[in-house]
Image (cartoon, rainbow, N blue to C red; front, side, top):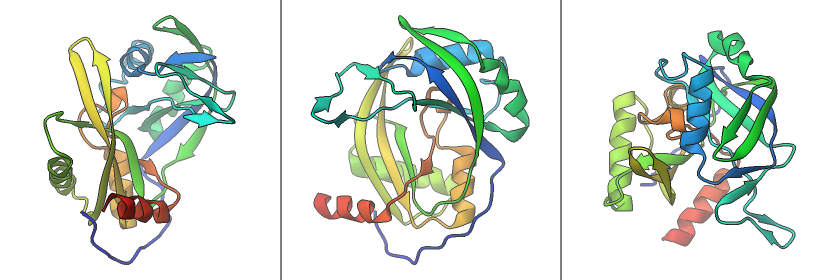
Length: 225
């Protein structure tokens, strides 16, 4: 779904924020969603109780200088961050993560100092992982996501589904698709960033971040058509 409409950009902070922590960690499993979420929620007793709190899953470059990332291991750099989306009033409570050491499926991660990143409106938002039905077609996924956005009060005329992923949990395998939205008005952009999409934000699903280059969206769409 991709309908043309003029872009608008107005700055305004949201009610939620991203709290970003530096890390001392060399490697993590590619599929670390469940283990990392459990580590966070076991330390922050309120994390699972608040509806819109969420965890940004950790990412590294796919390749560089002739090197390609192994299929199941992430090699972290000193710039890699752990990031939580949480209410502004809970920033101080989340600071107890600083200095904590976690074992994530045999990989050691030490959480260090934090910094605050306010949510700002962007006309283009991207979620790497949105919970989906494996049996759904991409078109049906877009239709379902569009209805969920409308239920939230977000109007979007440009949507693009992307890569699929699978995640292991004690309750079975979860299937996701990436989702990009464009030409969002500032109010809707902040509304979506504050609320996310779906019920799995605690393990990193349905969390939207600004996307820098709207041209890349159009180019991807052109290649797809």
